[in-house]
Picture 1 (cartoon, rainbow, N blue to C red):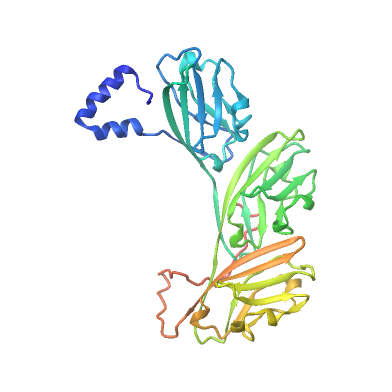
Picture 2 (cartoon, rainbow, N blue to C red):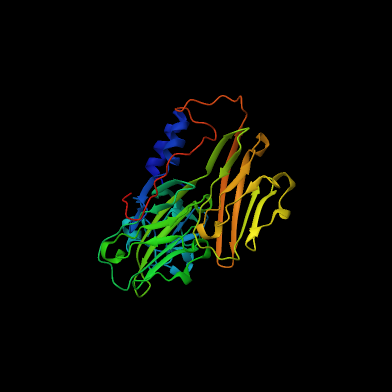
Length: 385
């Protein structure tokens, strides 16, 4: 049932006979609520003028039918809530008397975006009324092209945070990206995928600048990152999200060129046991480096004698691949994986080999793949965004 007063319901039914489409649009419109990530709370509004029985049950659910908040017999029922909403919701105490069934959701994140539904039930379980509210949590977006030296994920809060505060960055899979506590960065808590790739300012608790610098971003880093500040008692003092989009690196070369380089740089001084492997879109092995040398016998026959990497690649972190005498059939995506006990790296490079007689597009007209060979200026942690 929709939340309709009897008099209003009769009016709408009469209007429907004249314009049924208007009735549908009027009754099915869903209020839209927008909030920025990092806000302490957001209100999902609903007020009704209908008199509610004292034994009514009020239930909010999210788009996945998970219980967000339950009110019955006077107090809230936290035991019925889904665990992700416990301690994060609140409703007015006298809601059955006032008809204010609005829900306050604390620390909203991108994952909370969607349609929330509130239902009011009689004691016997019949639905008295229903209301939907659509929530959109806006997350700042940062774009960078694969191949940049670093990218900044901005996060600022009030200065002079407690000296024992813990700052924690995590990605969308809940892997730990970076941890700062007691004027130190404990690397043992960091997921290996981010090892030696992150940095935060040294005086962040004093300045409130909790921005994170992520070095050597690749397509695999595209994600939503969450920064949380905890008190010594593990209470959340602040939470904010940033969405990172790393654009796939694209290289264009004309057929007949002597060679083309597929760039990939990562952290230097990789362990000697590190294995570096390049492969193409068909999973053919292009190049393998392990045990401190090129393992040419492991390559697909099409790439033997045609692919090479630099000699000091583990020391410099320059894992770029040079492909000799590229042809049209070499066009496509190439993948590089770096593997070690405590290190994981991945990158994707898209190569387009154009025919010699293929007409170049004007510079002001984008290509479907395009070339990006301009000088790159890294985004450092000291720069404002």
